[in-house]
Structures are given as C-alpha cells and as structure tokens.
Length: 466
Image (cartoon, rainbow, N blue to C red; front, side):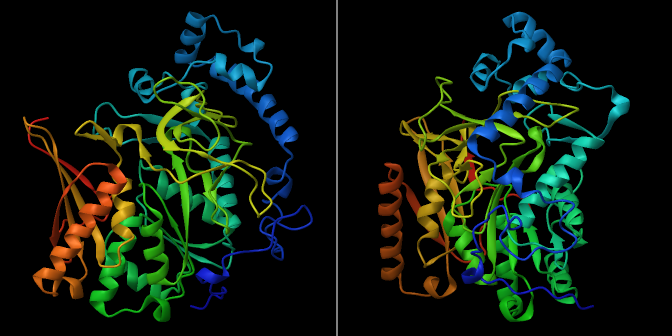
C-alpha cells in the first residue's frame, strides 16, 4: 500500500505565518480542505473575538440555567442570566468543580432531554464517584472540527496515515483524535494502546506518518525499538506525534523527537469540557493556542480565586461556549499553567497558554516545601546520563517525610566504575536540591529495572502511613 506524504523532520516544522489570504498554516490549500477550514476564526481581531465570546456566553448561560445544578446555583446566588451583558459579568457566575459534577451525578448538568444525547464519556472513578460528560450530535461534530483544526494546524493532511495509540472507550482521548483525523480524511488505524511489537508492525506495513501517544509510552516504544534493533528514522515514515494525557517536560519531548526524528506537538484537553482539542501547539511551538471561539479562559490563584497577572502561574478555569448538551461555567480544571504574553509568529490571535506543569492535587509537601513532580523531571531529563524512567518515592515517617528518587541510568553509564556513578548521584542530588529546595536521596538503578506501563506513567509513590 502506497500513500505519499512529505517527511517532516524537526528542522522543517516551521511554516509560513498565517494570513487571511492563505489557509490555516500558510501552505498551499488542499482542494478538499475548504469545507472545513475558515481562517477568519483563527485570525479574528481581539475586539471581534471578544464580541463573539460575549454573544456565545449569553446563550451558554441561558442554556446552562436549564440544568438542575445551575438552576439551583443561580437561584441561591440570585443570578439572572439575562443580566449577563459583558465579559466582566463572567466573574458574577459561580465556579464549577469536579466535586459538583460528582454530587450531581449522573444527569444534574444535562440541559437537553436524554433522547437528544448520543454519547457519554466518563472518568475512571478510581478516586470516588466518576464524572460523566454528555454529547449531542452537534456536540460531537463541533468537537471533531476542533480536533481537526488542531491537527491541520500542525501540518496533518488527508494524505497522512494516522495511527491512534491512545485508549478508546470512556476515555475521551482516543475517540476525540479518531474523529478529528477522519474529518481531515486521513487513513485512521484505531489500534489503541499496548502490544508494542504490533504497533511497530503497523507503522512499517502501512507507512504510518502521524501518531497519537502518551509521552511515557513513546519512550517505552523507543526502548523496544532499541532492543529489537529498529531504526525508526530509516525504517518508518513517521513525521508527527501528538503527545498528551500526562504532564511532561520539554526534555521528554526532545527525547521523543530526537529518537524518532519527528516533530512532537503538545496538546491539551479534558473530558469535562469536551476532551482533546481545547488547546494545541502550532508549528512554532511557542505555547498552546487555546481556542477562544469555543472557550473563555481564566487563570486564577487557587487559594484566593482571584485572577493572576499575565505570565504568572495559576489554575486554569474554562467556560464552554459551544457545548449544547452539557455546558460548563467557570470549570476549575485543577491544571496549572500561565498565559504567554505577546503574539505568536504564526499569526493566530487566540491566546496561548504554557505547557501544563501539574495539577493542584499533584503537589507534594516535603519538609514544608511545595513540590511538583515535573520539577524533578525537568532536572533528570536534562542530564544525558539519565535514562527515560524514574520513580519518586515519598516516605512518610514520624520524624518527617523523606524524598527518594530512583533513577534509571543508561547502560553504558551503569557499567562505569563506582566512583563515576557516585559522582553522578551527587550531581543529581545537587541539581534537584537547587530546583526544589529539598535535599533528596537518590538511588541509581539499572536500565529497564523500574516498572513500565503502557498507559499513564506512575511517577510518584507514597510509602508508609498516610
């Protein structure tokens, strides 16, 4: 089977700036793209974009008032949906939390009758009652268009072969990208996660050019390639990877790009407000464009609930503007990020957010210091001697918590003499302490000795009494 698509290596990812005369990426337009791509939505002036947002916000608030949860919340707080007249009025609306979704499970946020709903997705519910999200047919179509917009922006075209290595089912990630790729006209291979040797077989046989994959699993696939003697840059046609579903550092992305010889794009989404397609990197990779024609974005201090200054990290809050079956107002995502100032060279006018650094509930407190796991990852992935896997153990003790980091080192490093390894261990301790202000214990371990997973990586383990 032969499908042609130009190979896109790291140095080739930048494309011409977008303008109103070009299509979404500034490249020559494909004849079959025009029904889907309207550059005007991505290059709206700030004034026009905010005008669109307020019109859609008014409709969204009126629709949300039909849901049992918001009907009661509006009554308690004496909110009249008809008095929402500007974006400043957004702050008069209540926040919505994951606990609210759980307490009003299953239908407390639904604004249409159940016979208008065509799809349900859900969280795993591993920490309690699951959260569910409902879609009408129009919601599904709007979601597919947003994901397709993201994929097109990075250079995906109908000539591409898209291998979806994410989970299907109640998880939104797999089906969200699947529908977006089909909307573009790609050949879609819905393989799902796991069975790595089969993944590699499919990549070779069907000349896969684009993959959707969890970053930690991409590193595992790289390890399998090395073990099997596979050179992906010469044996595969891969050119683009979409990575997401777990926080990851720039160092992780660089390792994926360097090993496979591809451009890896950071993506963001969450099931409560749709799934994937909320925000995405363009080829310039200077933050993720968050689609403000579909969402109003706030970043707040999670303690005071007040907006933070531009460039300061806080909790991302989203209000949906196009959801029909289950709109959400001021949803507290618990994800930590910041607005990036200025405009993007690509010409898109939608605001950009930085990569997600973690979640408010991911924070560890060790010796009175707030620590996010990704801070430790950034240090480890910057060291060439370190392998692709690590584990953070927080040991709960009566005398105070202890932080132990188990770090896999590369084979050639592990074979060095003990003096060299001890020097590396002390270097990691020093650089981690400089980053998190706590002195950890560090244990260097053999390659492939820490647990692997074909889903989200478990990077933190709590040991002892909690």
